[in-house]
Length: 126
Image 1 (cartoon, rainbow, N blue to C red):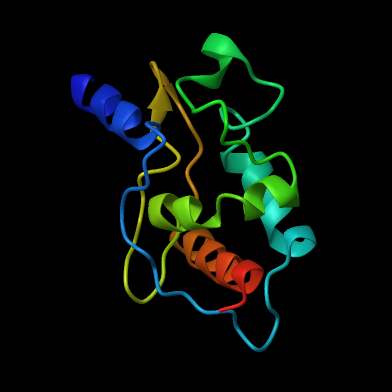
Image 2: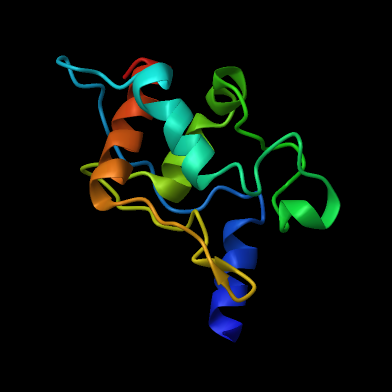
């Protein structure tokens, strides 16, 4: 339990961790905010990283890092890539944390993490 709490605090500390995934935007069926990003962030991130969350309801997520809109996601693509996405150069799984207290949180599949890396690459034009 102590180890999970430490991992949560390190992961939500606001400092980029992990490594750049090196993911690229696929030429066929590239993920968009409408086709992938919005559902991903709603399902895995807004529990803590939402403008509607304040104080303890943010579970230590930095107050300046929110993912409610495509614009807010775009402001944080590098950090998202280094904490939650997969690609040929890195498999980052720092976010989302495994739990909040004793309550487990849903986790993206490996395929979703790969698609997240591609989505970020498409957003930043790689």
